[in-house]
Image (cartoon, rainbow, N blue to C red; front, side, top):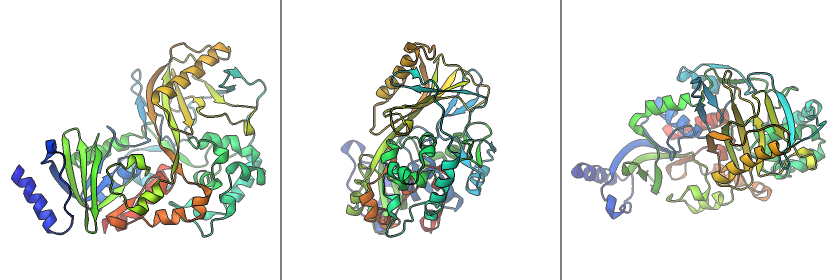
Length: 469
């Protein structure tokens, strides 16, 4: 085995494709070596799509994922009572060819759906700070304001394409805080609806308008339902990632992290720590799909340009889960509202709402979504959610149970990476886009486009000709 490993390394270095690299630790002097055409770091939506696309183009890949499953923000729970699936991460997809073709590749059926509850519900509007029901509150009708909003979005068609293709100079209206944009164009009626769809944006009103219009560029119908959308017929968005994992076989490395990297002009060398020990990945090219914040990139050999850009990113925090034993009836949705604040938006950190399920015939669960402007521990998030339920009970709003149980929970943090208006004005996204292909590396993920599976797949598809060349 030792002779084989040494022979592979000597042959690879002799070819001139990869430079010499520091030896791993003394306890792992002879890690196994894997040679592939492309190494992909991150097995979420973008990374898995890249791996599938490259394999379909005849390229060999190694896919490295830090978690125990593929799929990233795609989270699915199996109800033990019915064996039915419940998506509580990614649920809805637009009805476009990128989506139907990708699911079709795995023979996974899709059906019209917008993620709405499977049965009629009653909406409660509650201030979660007190747990009290807000008597007489009516959710604003966004119909008229959305016509104005749509006219504004139409002025910037470049926001409706995957990636960041901004003009120079960037229009100033896109750089002002979204709250100022709302006031300028009298868009009061859309704010609470956008806040429900653009979950995870932190303080929505202070976010540069560019990000809000980029993310939410197709207004809903007056009813609030997205015009053309699909969901998986089996309510299992994770099914595709499970099938992809089986297809990858030994080409996927779960529960694995990068510990060292060397990207020279003619190849890449990645040392990863896996449950089976250290492994070395030798590849011609590299695709990185994890959020490019510096805390995620320890062990990466970042260039000055990469480090200079990535250190400018700020991020929000977003959490999702399913709760059992809340005491709240299945047909009640409890929305967080603060009537003493602009546009009735609740302060963070806190819950967006306690939602009813979109999966039919599954009872006793509530879908919870929680946002914050800074990362919190999972323990703190769960405690805050339980405290909110306790306040509902104390205030007499809903006779909630005293011991709610998290049957599923995931952190999507860091979320919604963004930079300041000054950085955008100074050409941040032009410089970010210029990283593609440098040092045999291509970048994908929401930071390079937006939080939308279909958008990420389309963006990643656009990289494939260069990566596969």
